[in-house]
Length: 141
Image (cartoon, rainbow, N blue to C red; front, side, top):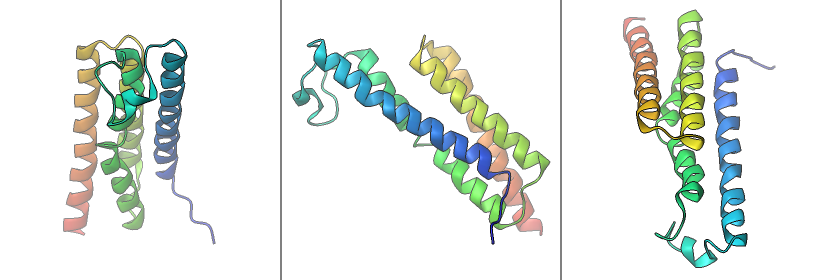
């Protein structure tokens, strides 16, 4: 028996986006290596000071996608398991997904800090709202 819930779609899209950003890392590193900007030694303990900023960005964005978004995945599974997937949770989930992808797009392209910060901050408010809604429903049910 297959159980589908719409909450899994924004979760899956964010996971695929994260894998997309992960794939950008070796491309940036290999390109920089071929241009003589870095050597394998520059990555021995993470990234040395010699690694150019444009090579660091995909890795930093990937790490961002593994930090707070884990709360989104757990919230999605919690909503599913407790039968709390409804229009409000779905709306917040889609907004969260859009904000996280927007954050990545700013980070990986023109990288204006205040634009990035705005998207990051609002996405954190949205994930907090998801959790507050879930907590309220779990405590009052």
